[in-house]
Length: 224
Image (tube, rainbow, N blue to C red; front, side, top):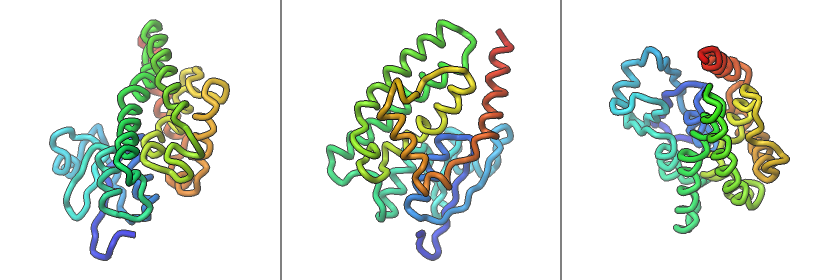
């Protein structure tokens, strides 16, 4: 738990996979915090104050000191609250965890997202191929129950997008990006991850997020 006198708040929106990462990190550590929901169409003075450069969420504010970017925030959480570590202590494994977390952001997120949210069929097919290729690399990295072994680690938290958001957007687009047939180890990992007690209580409700992104998808398709 956060020590007495500590002020921890998280600026975010419920539909963001990047905000969810930070919520998972804090909850896995048992850190008490205040969630301050933001309206990204009408950005608050608080958000502009704490993240004047990118003006984006998530922003973690710890004793009035702001930290932005989800993977940077996760490292800060792990460094500041030492119990239940999710980054490995050994330097090589620590570096590999950082590598795969960044790989998810650079390769998996954009390719899978553009596989659904485009009305250009050639672009869709290209991104489906790139998503499949990226997920295949991660399939080979699942060695046990989780990426980090028997306990949830840094890569697992970074990969919440794969477990929760990819199944959601593939249902919207009628695609099969992540299935038990294509990626059995990754699919089984996603079920283990989503059924973890702390993950279960942290994840946002699926239906409103599905409705939000389905409306965006329908607008894109209608603009053909």
